[in-house]
Image (cartoon, rainbow, N blue to C red; front, side, top):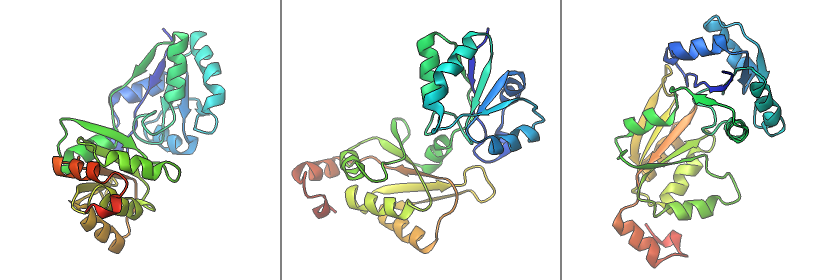
Length: 241
């Protein structure tokens, strides 16, 4: 039966690719790739010779209906992103939603995603957590940070190395300078690193040591004292330390 297969790909080390993922990519009639050049290197490494079609955030809203129709007509299509699991802060959600709407079977393989190893390695509680992905870059950013100031669960964020210091500085401002934070970068790659400390300490560290690579930030949830402080000063976040 034709279907959409969501295929996670390694976030760094190619040895993290599963046997099943390789087989599915070989058997698919078509591979949808966020960047065909990036996926091309992956396919070449695993000797996968298959047709690719570009599928990214700039064109996905125009093509999902047609792609779902192709699957209904008998094609099996595999979806990959540049790294990790598609649709998790990557293109893919719109296509999955349209396939579900049209009654197309969707199968998602288990596999690599950046936030799980970062969360486990952080040493922060992981029995409950919330995934925030990328914070808004401009509009709505401060509002979201204020809302998250009283979030009691461990929080997970993706961030660019160019905005990391800004984000950590804002964590110190809105969450408190002593909030425990863990920053993981280059997960599963040669220069993988996890740095742990308070928001203030990590701000100082990455100000002195410019970060590189893909970054996952794990922030501890608020405790009762912090929640009470925010409740007492809902419009004066700067006064809460």
